[in-house]
Amino acid sequence: MQDDANFKRIMAGLAETLEIVEGRAQPARVYAPAEIDVKAIRAKTGLSQAAFAARYGFTLGAVRDWEQKRRRPEASARILLKVIEMRPEVVEAALEVA
Image (cartoon, rainbow, N blue to C red; front, top):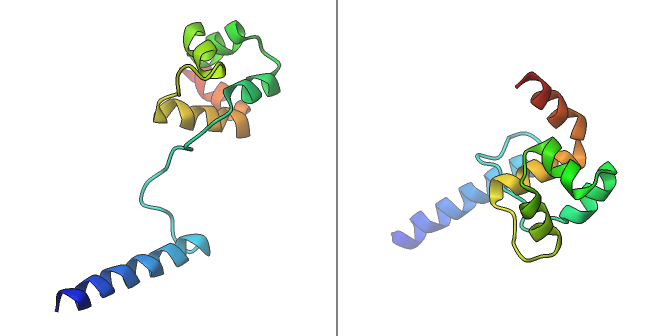
């Protein structure tokens, strides 16, 4: 009996995954990228480390540590950095309102 219940849960999960992949459903939660290239993202903005930190609310030390791989950004910072990479104008517009 337990095997049947486990099989049904696995199949339900696979069906849900297929719906997400095909765009018929949204994932239940957002996943932060495991790795992010902070230096490349900052370079794309054309900002210095200090200007990048100031514009997006990071500390200069954090940006330096991330770029030199001494520290890894927390999940929330990785998500913000991904948005900065993909749509910096959205982050800037949101910060102007704040």
